[in-house]
Length: 519
Image (cartoon, rainbow, N blue to C red; front, side, top):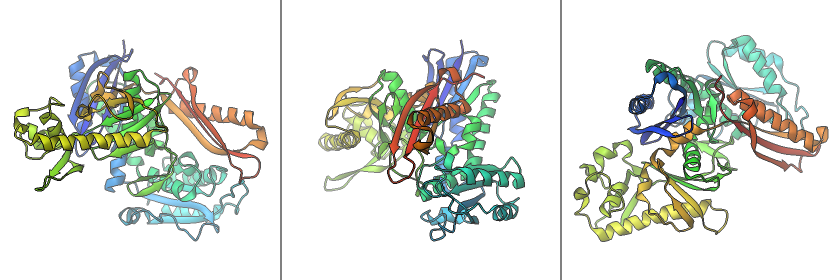
């Protein structure tokens, strides 16, 4: 018998589970998320191992869904010293790199920014030959001054040649250990958003490395020699090496872990998932057991990007959401929250702040803390507040549906006890066992995936052979990320004809997923 640990870091709680090889829950725990993130992770890990009482040498896998990279970008802390290289002169000189990035972040990233001649047209023709001499000058100038390099070339998803040549030069001069992020591996078509995503990826490489090494060392300190995986934002896993190369893919992995965990616990492959935490409620869509992907550009820490992200609606409602009542009887719900301080500040725990949890307990909807501490509150007003809370969730559910037909809704997250067993727009409401730690379960049971998204010219190979090539590329990516080759399946594929490109072009996206490898 072998075991696996799944840990997921939320804004309020860090959840951990220990599963056996049949994915049965052996133990689970919730600990407060700490300001430095890592301390909370180690506390949750030790607690879940202590509760399980299983032989430590039998714990073979450890999966972590972390907010380290998100927090670093939002807080502007612990970022790498980055050199930004755009290959696109003379065509892109009018709009410089870092345009649209908030001032406080731009100050940290704008010290080493270069635009080099080169890049491609949308049909793969060169805008200009790559200026190799300029790249060598840039490499020598930044040597010893930066520890990460972001390279973006115009229409790199169509032709990646200039990015790859630039990376070779950078590694030749700065050494093979330098972290290099290439835009064609991270974002899709759209220069500025793809460049931004690549720069952010380059900026959080050290954060991911520190998080990974800290987690591995903490496991070893507990006598556990487990293979470590990170959760990524499509609901699958990646090994440590892959996570250090593409740390930006850990952003938003928490909600996707919850969606995957909800699918497993409720035994449903298509449904809406409502994940209620201490700070926010996230609503996502399950399609064939995986989260639906967003088709829109996404902002991270004020930076507009276009790499893949889950399609989510988040509302400021959770267990710790602060309710403010005015003298005239009007009230506001959030969006701020007491977060992990709920056990100190919530009224049912003896605090003086009215929260969503207090409202639910006072109305008998939830059994948390001491109901006597909220028994004096005006029930009529509380019913109005509770009705508004439910309506907020029902409106969000409505936004995520693609038709007016009712759909199954799975409630997960510790805060989901606040919601009733019936919701408008839901054909049925399911609150599965272990709903409070669905996110950690989603991390523990996740498969390993690989994805390719690029523009192909169908005239070269024909449509069938092109799609086969894309499938093979996705499978190769899944193997690199840590999947067993014989278990890999294609789980999602789309090809969109691009009528404005010559050569019968199409944007092809293929995702492959398989069981994680023990080797």
